[in-house]
Amino acid sequence: MPDFLEKHSATAVRTSDGVLIRWRTESETNNLGFDVYRIEGEKTVKVNVPIIKGHGTTGEPHDYQFLDTNPPDNASLRYFLEDIDFTGKSSRSRIIFVGGHKGKRITPWGRIKAQR
Image (cartoon, rainbow, N blue to C red):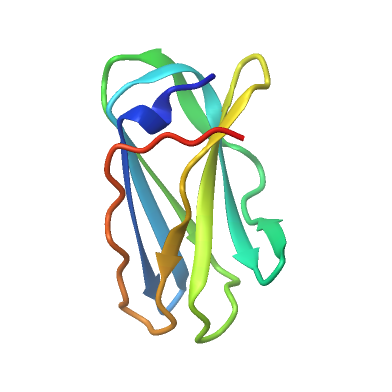
């Protein structure tokens, strides 16, 4: 499985343009890229097209960001990242919570690992 989640941090903040999600990997192994998902009630919606390209295998840190330009208004939101490797295997992060008002930040993720 991809191990970007072993050394990973992320933040998210509402802006006037949507929700800006930023994350950093300290290293990557066999990383094709990332998808960003928003949880809306009981359904999960992929919010990026195309995949956000990863850096393959590297011991170097890399910064990423994605702007969700169509989040529901004034709702507290939940997101997660999915890392996809070159064989099609995937790992996903824990859920990231974003408050319902512009400028509201979430708590950065620490060292996390979750698999689906």
